Amino acid sequence: MTFEEAVAAIAQATTFGELVGGDRAATYRRLLKLVHPDVAPTGRGAAATEATARLSALFDREETLTTPRGTYRLGGLIARGDLADLIALDDDKLLKLPRRPADNDLVRAEVAALTALHREGDPRLRAYAPVLVEAFAQEDDSGVRREAVVLERLTGFVPLTGMRRRLDPRDAAWIWRRLLTGLGWAHRAGVVHGAVLPEHVLIHPERHGVVLVDWCYSVAPGRAVPAIVSRHRAAYPPEVRAKRPATAATDIHMATGLVLGLIADPPAAVGRFAAGCRFDAPRMRPQDAWQLLAELDELLEKLYGPRRFRPFTVPAA
Image (cartoon, rainbow, N blue to C red):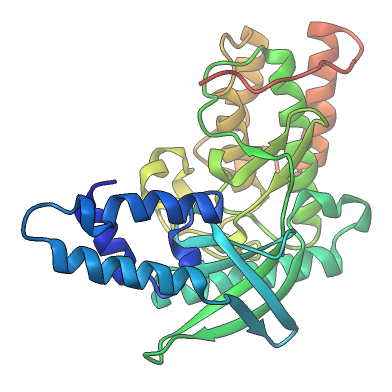
């Protein structure tokens, strides 16, 4: 970060948490070194003095968030998603806040989906989606309202981003199996995820856990997915791009493409199996994720024998 970038970031921040990229104190020291008047570029002393004062004021302020359910201690920015920022709350929760009020409807869709999953879905499978703590409308000083959600924080999970074409098929298999399990659970609860993409699938490498996140694009079966992540446009099946009804077959198409893209050298039999899940016409694809899981298990047993646990570590970038 340059001096000018740091000055601009400090000027735009309303809380110190918006500036944090890791440890709070370390972030303060790093920014202070960048904007201190002693190191300011020629002619920028006044801007440096103002930025230093504002930085100190933001750092010293007690930062809390009060919601209908209680008061949380605000932490730093954890991640920037497709449409929202994730900010640490206390030690075990996350605040998800859209950057644009125009995306409020997508956040409401996530609230509806998570509520349905935990009300209608099999309770034994609830670990396949984040836990919704509460949802509320947040209004800033200018009167702009944004829909916000508080989620339980997932520990030890990492996204599938950065792992394309790197995995042994046997390692990709457990991800595929658990992904189909989670999707089958959602479909039974009347929810189509609508965006099964690398950043929306988190895995726990040691425990072989999978969680589907970012349910903002979810819909009831038969409804059109409301938006797409433009950089992944090619990953969506035709019905999503054409704004036609989405079904369980929509998620199956995307999940299959995602896992196939993880495998370094897919066996021919796996390629044929995947091709049958990715026909352009939704009616020609499998319609039931759990039935497809049973068929996948048969294929894997033919290829590799009885299922056994394989220790897994995330491939180096």
